[in-house]
Length: 323
Ligand code: EAX
Image 1 (spheres, rainbow, N blue to C red):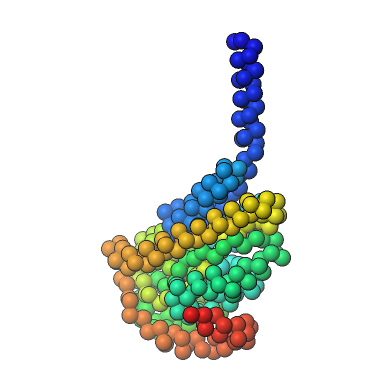
Image 2: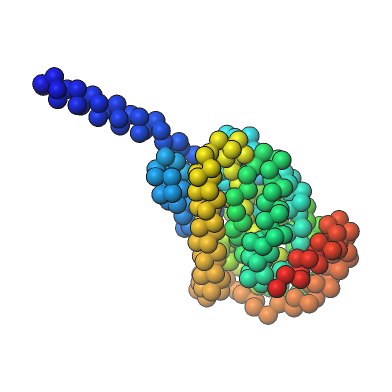
């Protein structure tokens, strides 16, 4: 090889090395499978970050609780052993107690209401509460409205829940509410739920159609009731120090990528809600669409009075009053 060619090759090689070393790799995880509303969310996020930072940042995606359950992933983000996570708000109150109010049953009328609250002043203020806890909360996403499934009986009203042993999220608001409905609550991390249902450790669980389908709970649960008892927000969180290290332009790129992720995620939830009932019926589930929601609401009245005390009646009203 001629000396000039060798030099050219060396320069090119060094250039490639420089590009490679200038790429920062980050991790993001979810508890559901890749083919899910959360999977669509983090795949979109990874693609957008790479595009918007011209490949200087690469986001590695981990699905199905491969890096642990949601509580573990949020803990990892707080510690910085993992940069990012998309998680339900289930375990979030243990880190940012202000988020508890969002998991109050029958708080939101529908998804449009929930999205308006989360993307509006109330939700955006709440994102800031994460700052002092070691997180940068990039955007709200969602699981959707949660419904109850079980292997024992059809649930038409709350009277049918008495004595059912149900897995709940590790969320104090959910646990208090479900106890109030007569359920025997068993808080459990999500990656353990399928096996617990299969082995009969618990009779049931509750999750949106999106999660039920992605996690194939129809294989281990016979009855589904469209209770829609609580809206389940998700949040895209990042380690605060990792976020603070970004240039101003890259910070914007990350926030905008998270918003795109939320858009894709919500669109998939809408799609899952539209197809879920017929899909799950064809997979063999018995589905009760006529749930007496008013009965649930009245049975929850004492618990709700307690929530009003804890979170402030005015704060709950402010959320309910968003049009
Ligand atoms: O975020 O734990 C749960 O039931 C969640 O809804 C699930 O992990 C998806």
